[in-house]
Length: 171
Image 1 (cartoon, rainbow, N blue to C red):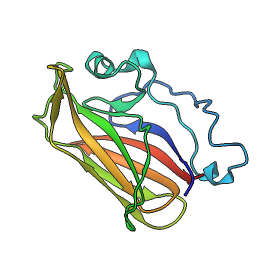
Image 2 (tube, helix red, strand yellow; image 1 turned 120 degrees about the horizontal axis):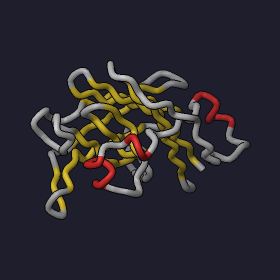
Image 3 (cartoon, rainbow, N blue to C red; image 1 turned 120 degrees about the vertical axis):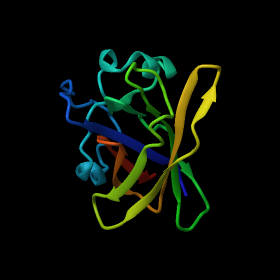
Image 4 (cartoon, one colour; image 1 turned 180 degrees about the horizontal axis):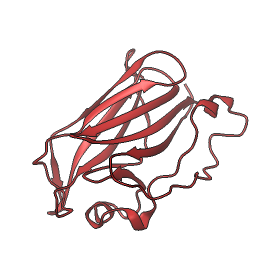
């Protein structure tokens, strides 16, 4: 099997107002890849609207989120030899307290993954609350996709919901 491409596009929903997010100008997949038509590209939250604790976690990452739930734009996609979970991505989810600090007090976000360009779902999960370098705290999040396609990921924490779309393409 050849290299794989992962595209993540996103949006967030909650009861609070959101900054406008213009469409991203991501150049991949290749213009000849018509499978992306069902996965419209939506830009992450503008950097200046990302909370300080989230931005400080990883200044290079792009983020989807709102209120107390923030999700790093997935960038890595591994091909596995597993028959049921052939493609895997890993990323950070961060939950914030009322003061805007990372916390585990609200519990882990719940991850749902549904295919948009066909039927089916994928398995998403969060690991235990992790700490590194003294002050970096997050929920390691993994999604196992059974096959290429357009997948909508919805993370929820209480009434906060963050959605983004992942385009998994075999190349």
